[in-house]
Image (tube, rainbow, N blue to C red; front, side, top):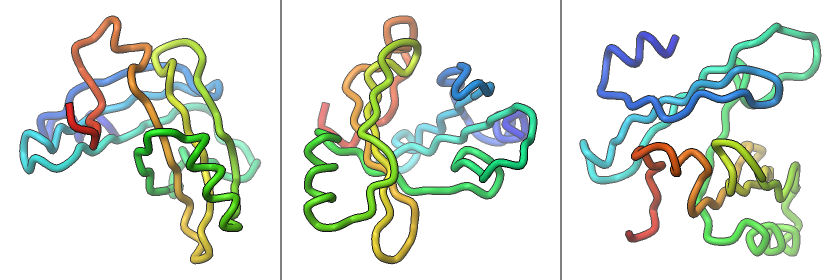
Length: 137
């Protein structure tokens, strides 16, 4: 599927890694170049199907992610407000996504949400590509 997107718009290959024992390819469309707003990332996971409950990374899975300065402080604030915390805080300690912190939570209206923080990811030591950040440079 990512092949179709690669040919349609000026996507940049960001990283190809193995995550959760599945192959993961990430493409980045630098919307900052088009609209000076943000970027869009498409994730393509591959692997054998199974009967376990679907993960957000599988067909039909979706969520909205917010970049925050400190995932741990964000998690504490959300817990204090009674928000349903689902996973985390988590930290990737090695590999291309080293330094990525995230939590999953569900607000009262039910949408799956993520808060993430990342200052310098592992892959950046070998690549000039960067994730777009809402923080000023």
